[in-house]
Length: 463
Image (cartoon, rainbow, N blue to C red; front, side, top):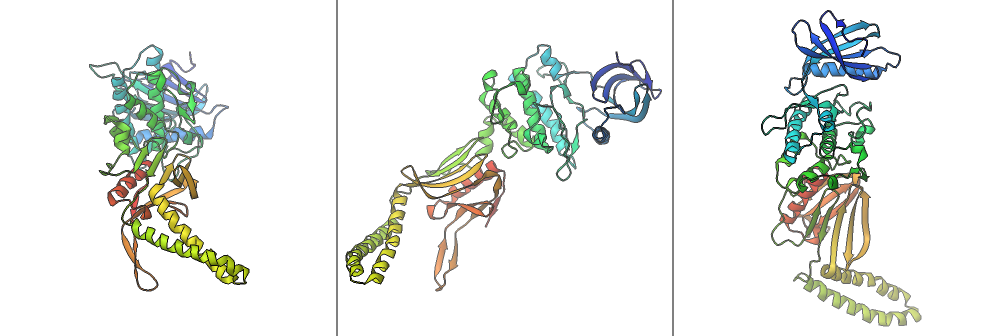
């Protein structure tokens, strides 16, 4: 039994039992002698292992709880300084919620159906939406089974959900604090570096739900490239499994961004597909789009023979026939000292090869844009062979998606040059182009731009 049990603090709060203990902190169940109601008292004591960061977190918890008003979050009642036989410190008093933690339910043998998992997720997303929508947004930073309370089943409901313990809470101003707090196994990768955003709470929610369906702590489950592998241990629909994977994406860029977005995805029957395939593929398009959590790939097939090739083929035949005759005479001229004319003929060989290349690429070449969490690459291939130039860049350097329309400009002689529409993906100062000479239609460009925008979480800039 703790030394403070049965003591009365501030002539008002009768401590009844110890609920939890951390370094320098104690949490008690007490009775408010003024109102007769049960309350929770959190004590922060100036012990030998006292840390000033703990005081900052304590003060922030008091400040945040005072500003919150939600039926699923404990209400602030009081705060005061204390002097006990264990030392001086501070006390925070909040309402007591009579319910068991999710961790306690699982440890006692309770299992959860898919419908119950979804119901719990929706309740928690509602609470997170309330916190994250505040100005500035409030990030809990320590969502885990022991910090989520669940009441008894009522009808078809798994029970009322409550979120407690705001001792690690952060208000997101600018880039936020660099203090590393949270619980290993439930923390997203960015939190290990001291960075937290609202999507960090979504990751912790996902790992908490995975704990409910597997009964295992997330760090006990196998991982690959920092992704938790749990699907072979659960009996859930593919859509819910995919949604949980989406919540627990290690990369912030690929994770669900907000509680509203997560709730919207959860309520859709074809969760991820309905969110990522924002625009429908144009009828008749032969462009292939692969859009998954790990990769976005666009494959533009060969255009094949078309009327526009006829003048190019005719010019290529005439030009190369001309060059063949030149080459016949070039070597004679070279040997007789006409080296200038010979060099002139050889230099124009490049023009002929350029036309031949264009014809071959139009008939057999394809363009492949591939984006993974690590990099972006753009290649041109003929019959599976990659042709230079090959553009690659780090994925995190992508800064803009630009969609241009058909335009015209004057050349140096006053003529008109047609500039076809295209998509430009800017990666630093590099430009990855789709369309243009590939002659994608406007509906295809719109479709691809919307999918790129959704996958990269970048707006479309229209020029």
